[in-house]
Length: 119
Image (tube, rainbow, N blue to C red; front, top):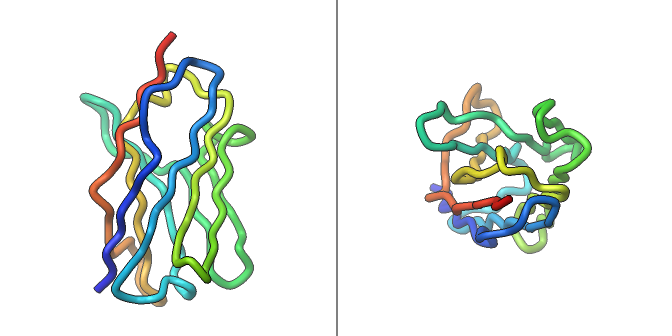
């Protein structure tokens, strides 16, 4: 099993930046695709972005492209989400998730960290 713990959330003014971390334990995530998702109040959970394990390729939702950057440090078993130029509509609980090699969906999820962007 993989345990994922997000941190780094908080309150930030619009236009500001935050960096979220997702620390994994239980197993190395070096061969896992890692994803970030978010869920705003009264909304469905949505995909934010992901990073593959093999070539560190990244994918982003259109809503965050150019503002958010995902990176990973396999030596630290940690994935990061750098969020710049934050907007009010980025307010949500952010979750990281891991996808076991060969799996079609994300298998393990963190508990989430709240990001609140104020005007």
